[in-house]
Length: 346
Image (cartoon, rainbow, N blue to C red; front, side):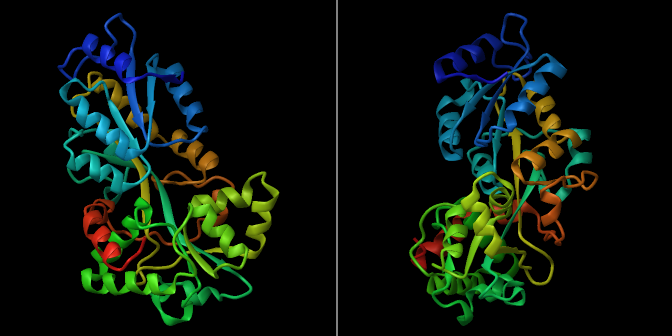
């Protein structure tokens, strides 16, 4: 059941539930969980409905951009009705963690289901889906070997030939953070400068706009999240499908260890009035059925090794994911932002 509640109503729910963090209902016997989510995908609704059917717990939904939700939870303080915060990037989860908005959770289910490199070491948040930051390239102009390493994108071969979104994109911040973690800040800074020098145009639009720009001949390569391309290739939009007939997806490697991986994940709110229900919902997202559903409908990759990627994602799954802990590059967000700003990556 998808329920949109404003601040006033949600605050009332929290007041009824009390401030102990252990209450499991809204004060009238009804089981609830208040989900603050920065995921905006229609396919998630089916998961919410199934969770309610299976558990009897109603989901009260508050949607927004990650920074907006972090700001809301911060302003609500100890009276926040938020039980669970979900975001589509490790960097966004790190920002919430830095704002002291999570509490550690020990769950045998989550520890078993989620690999160690896809969760916070202290149990404050867990990733339940993966997405890869990869390259869309013009197959008529670019050879796969030319984009098989992230370092090559900053070289002279692609002078004036790269399309990319702005520096405030959390996906780009996480990628640069991963490069800084792997290479150190000096080499990562040189890479950022190389990308800026190689831009075919000033950053604009989202990831799908970058892929379309490659198809239109504006650039030869573009940085994008994997699921945007897969969605275009398998969707109903004839124009987008036509683009993917001439633009392919490449999976660069970082130091020969694999492709940069990010996550969708969540953590239990520090002042959660329905803590037990929040943990149940997070464990539900981490289940094999939920991961397979999200992969099939939103074209992300499952986090758990025992969940095979369903069609159409399986056609883009033959790559090695980098083993770097997502918490490591997430913590480098401020450093990445400074590098990109200094290099005039707008």
